[in-house]
Amino acid sequence: MLHGAPKWPPFAPEATTPMPLRDVLDRLPETRWPRLCLTLLCLLLWLPGFFSLPPGDRDESRFAQASRQMVESGDYVRIRYGEEERNKKPVGIHWAQAASAHVAEALGVGSRDQIWPYRVPSLLGALLGVLATFHWGRALVGRRAAFLAAAMLASCLVLVVETHIAKTDAALFATVAAAMGLLGRAYLSPGSFTGRQAAAFWLVMGLSILLKGPIGPMVVALAVVTLAISDRAGRWLKALRPAWGIPLMILVVLPWFVAIGLATQGRFFAEAVGGDMLAKVNSGEEAHWGPPGYYILTFLIAAFPAAFLVLRGLPAAWRDRLNPGTRFLLAWLIPSWLVFEAVATKLPHYSLPMFPPLMLLGAAWAMDPLRRPAPAWLRWIGTFALVLGAAGLGLASAVLPYLADRRIDPFALLGIPAAALFLWGVLGQLRAGQPARAGLAAAILAIPLYAVAMQAVLPRLSAPWVSPRVAALLAQRAPGLPPAQFGIAGYHEPSLMFSTGTGTQLLRNGPAAAAFLAEAPGRFAAIGDRDLAAFQAEAQRLGLNLREEGAVEGYNYTRGRHIVLRLYRAAS
Image (cartoon, rainbow, N blue to C red; front, side, top):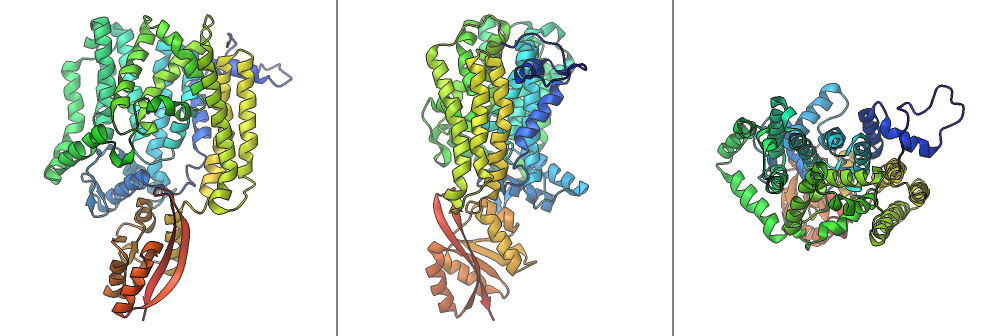
């Protein structure tokens, strides 16, 4: 148990010896600068690899490329990927990414052709979500527990990953955390809930719709319905001022929805609702199907290293369900969790909007001086997930360079001692009967573990990053070549267009690549190994004098196969 302690700074002026780790863990939740400390923790956890990881497939590069085309074209209404309309998600994340690219260029620190500016909204969204969990969680579980919950949330593997991916989910997470925080304030203290807070609630709801359509409002609405049934509604619902709040929310989203409806002649709504949203609900879109219970199983990995503490706290949360703060968190968690389990399409990050209440419930149990021990089977499952997650990350970091590139990387081997340090620190606190210290130690000791994986290992691999290597080879062999003069057959991953530029020609097959080279002089084409024979046969038929300019060999991880791309031009 974390006992009471003097406020920050943790070292008294007269101290002459370093403070033991347990004292730092005890006193950190009492810091006078909790938001600053949480921000520093987030940056230490998330910045490794943020700038150095190449663009990933597939969603990240699709989103980033569509945002780059907005910057290039100046059209901030329609969403396009190459020549195709991308009528799947609303425009909010693309506006944020385009603004980030503009700011990076204006400050001279980056360009629209780099991937990291498009990741900034994800990082900021994750940070705002963590700070919102602390800010509004204080009224629900207390200041110390809210700090612990926010720290654990920042270290969750799924959130660390999402900060490195330029797409919607981390930003959506921020809007849900903020909206539910404001809703919690209205629920607990309706008499002091101001009109300004109500306006902020509805504005955040509007932003959430612009990011990912109905997902954010669904989480909020399910919580409202659950609480209204359990409490027979009351003043807290009126405190939200829905009479003018709902029109305010509509005012936020209506201009773009009208504009995109006119620009696409209604195709956006037909494809986004009928083709994207309903496909996810009914059929497990893009092979991402999962059975009911999927999120319970993946939570042990997605919420590493915090899952062990959350599992211990769940029985106590259910016993304490008559407490208003706990009841609110359960109303946030349970109905939305059931809906996500029922939907056919499942991915681990879809459950991210339910992580704040889980962390707050786990932290509240850990900070409770009268807590009851969790059942033994939950403790064993949590400890097993903790050990497996740390050992898995450490060993995977160590062996991945050999598996991918057939080389041993001394920096990657640091993953093993990082995992050992993590387990020594966290398990030691658990053995001492200090779950709150263990949770905070896990968040802090995850820093070197993630740093090795995200900075020392993944960006330094060669085989998975096919597209940047193709772009580098093309820049070497044909510097300044316009993207429209380059075509490729046999490899159409979105990272390729982002790496080689808008206008890159995605050719259907080998014969189409030969025809592309024959149409105009000075063109280059990259051919995948499966299309090579047909390409060479068609080139011979057309009388092309082919010249091979180099090759890129790698691993297409989205399709799970080895690939060789050969770069050709037609010699005169």
